[in-house]
Image 1 (cartoon, rainbow, N blue to C red):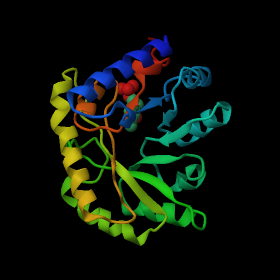
Image 2: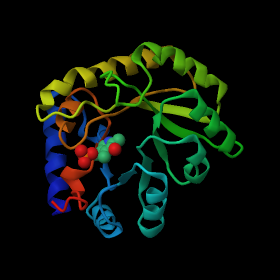
Image 3: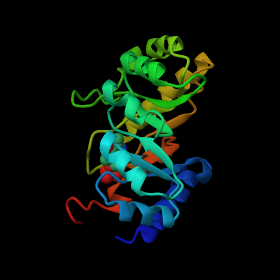
Length: 230
Ligand SMILES: *Cc1c(COP(=O)(O)O)cnc(C)c1O
């Protein structure tokens, strides 16, 4: 795995996708998803210039953050059990999987006085049963109900597209999330500016950027997958 080279390739793809879609490349942030790689590889990614690290499990993510001393912004991208909120709430900078009011309630309970918890609301745009996320029809009502939890600040929306080797098929999912984001923004909720879109992974990030992604979450194509030793 040559992480530097992978990062260069991804940055070039970002540039080209942004120029095709009249966007600024600076508006697209790369989260290196390190769930399948070692602490060493994670450090190498940061040394190669990665600024954002994503982990999807509480214990493993905390252990990695503890071992990797380098400066980075830490993203919790996996589904989060309410009983684990206490462990992770002060350790991660962003939570990408707010998908139920009971989780917001737990954030509110565990937040310090005046602390802001930066969240993405996960939306199940594709409607796959296996996927977590708020149903698109319920999103606006969900957003309004978050007012009851002032510690929770919604920076954006997150989705996962169905896995496919034909990335073009993911486009409606990503454009759907963008439309939902625009609807939420038009509510002008002070606790939910909702400017960001967390979407796109190794196999579909180019399409996600063309449709407006501001955070792409890339594991395999950037840092590899040491669990399957490729
Ligand atoms: C694992 C994971 C990713 C990265 O997947 P790759 O296909 O390896 O890029 C992105 N987002 C979430 C939520 C993940 O769990």
